[in-house]
Image (cartoon, rainbow, N blue to C red; front, side, top):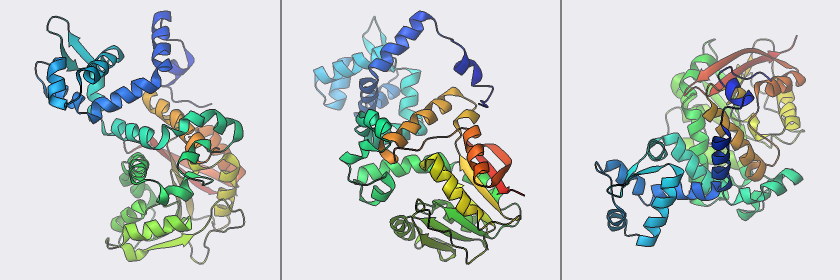
Length: 367
């Protein structure tokens, strides 16, 4: 496996003492309550209160400011203290926010991840074992009876939808500017956006290039959501939709137009290896030697920093338990192998897009 050199020391060598390793094991064993405590410290505004307080706050002051019971405040503060999200002055019994607590409160990516994991994943992950054993998203059942989460997106509870889309958009939006420069550098005019979701990237395309036309291929219900989302925006008349089930091997990409670019952004990670090959093979049938397929993914092995690789490998288990039961966040070797199996080859890889985590694989037909 090709792993970013920054990651290798952490992934190939034991760096913790026995005591540190045991401490981490204890934290993992109480992971669910550590997570919920931090989430509630944010929800009840306790982290924010401590962040604003110059001298720190006592239990009584926190209680008065939040209207929580003394018992509730005491439990939350003590659990947070031993987790390391708050600190205490032993002489005055005043609590203050730690650096970890500050990031939980203020880092927008962490806040998006917290909401996503609580609203979308938390209950579903209780059935992770069943999902792994049966190859289906058993954790999705408490939301509804759909084969994958994508068919049910438009019917999920409002807060679940909000957290799902916030997560989905955050991980792509910050890379769009650099991606657009790469895509349109050769004078492309017509983009086939496969799995275009709510049309956010399509809107960016027509805003970036006033001659651009974008056709979105996605599930029929997603195309309906997309049309409502882009309506009234500048350039919406240059955004078109084609409803299709991409998992149906008999379905074909629209070929009545020649597309300069086929674009798949954070899309292929939603499918199993066999499904990816099928989708790419069908894409190859409408390609010639001059147009290109661009795949944008957060490949976990190309990350510079361990927290990014950690988050991406954990997200794989969202796909297992909630999304579809058979996909994941792939690494470079796996994605390249699937591209080649489908009759394509990776021509160029653009790394460190946006906040640094995205890569674009520019692919062409073999031969």
